[in-house]
Amino acid sequence: MKTLILSHKADIDGLSPVIFLKLIRDDLDVLLLNANDINPKVTEMIRNKSYLKYDEIFITDLTLDKDTCELIMNTGHSDKFHSFDHHAINLVSNNYPFGVAISKNEDGVNECATSLFYKYLLKLYPETFDTKGLRDYTELVRQNDTWDWAREGGNKDANKLNDLHSILGRDEYIETYLNFFKTNKEFFFTDNQKYLLEVEEKRVKRYLEESEKTMFHATLCGHPCGIVFAEQHRSLLGNYLAEKYAYCIDFVVMINMQQGLSFRCNKDNINVGQIAQIYGGGGHVKASGAPMDNSLKREVIQLILNNKDLFLNK
Image 1 (cartoon, rainbow, N blue to C red):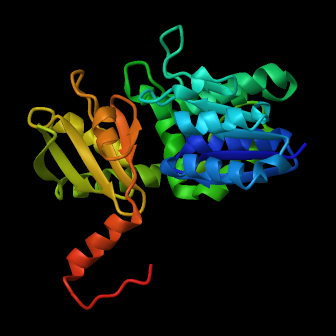
Image 2: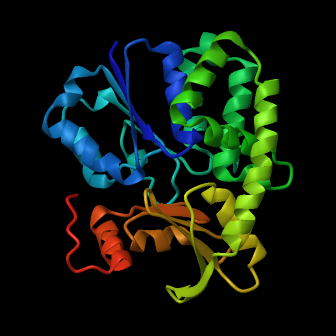
């Protein structure tokens, strides 16, 4: 069976479904994408009919819009597609037979793509996925992605797992846990990983403190906010600043010139998902993002270098 997975490249909620599929699929193609790339990519695959070479196509931690869902339905092969999404701003794929889109389940628990996908695989392959190790790992990913680890009763190991992803990088993280779950039925951090995490914890603390010094105060969409340039640890940084400066700002905007904008807040009356939509993005009420396209990057380069004779090839 030839399988394709399209998943979010930015975090462990996008990478973990890849690990799970690699445990049960030998003929697997993996395509990791930014959030704003999924609808153009699926549209392209349908129009050039490249999707036909796959028996099954999984889309995880990426949001399909209504037009793309309709395109999938009109192929006559919608049974090939399986989408797992949890972004509260747009759960449209839940209206289609191939979509499982749940932000908060019937028990009031915040879901993530990994937790939704794990439940799906557990029903089909209990001999592989019904282990304490995979259950515990999935719960850590869920707590990390939903930020439940930072609430009362949360598991701090969820944040450590995310730190390990930052240390290892995408490919090594996937390979590390693929090999780990092939030989271990329980989840744990190795002694070497514990050492690396101790070093990383100190480095992250310095990063948060240094980034804090560079924050600009501004007003956006009628709200006081903090704006900071950040390429790492955006969830930690955003929540750290939003909590520390809650007395004077409603949310934090983090600008990453490679990946786009991230918005974070911790106030009940603010929906940063709606703010992100203004900039072509989306996400959750408390955490969201928006892309930064190449045309804007070109403008930034021109502005910084301030040279009329500057010519950009890309």
